[in-house]
Image (tube, rainbow, N blue to C red; front, side):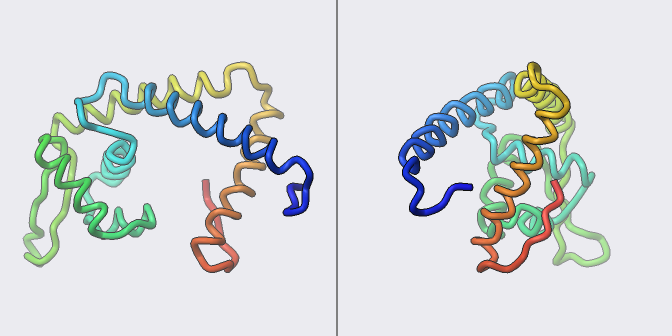
Length: 160
């Protein structure tokens, strides 16, 4: 376990920096391949969530992604301008605005799904089932550590 006084801290941090740079660069390259110019990883998350829900409110996405409403609104505005998503007011309550994928957005989602499959195949291609399970077990612990800080140290339930 990595402790504050551990003598290899610098070595670990250097490995993490290199890993982070390479992984993020590779994920972005694979996930954005073939997509409309201007769609980045944040937009991909938004498109995937809307695709899964069918239609939703911006506040639903903000809550799910644990980000501000204004951040999601800005991402959504760009996707509306690109004609990837559309906004529709609720007939029951005009204050509520639902967003959903357009036909163009559905095509982008299909590309995203193919890209995600390719990414997973590259990530895990030479790992055994046991190694993959160990990776996710460790990843879950790291995720809990990161989310605890966001939640002020409270216990956090993680469903990955």
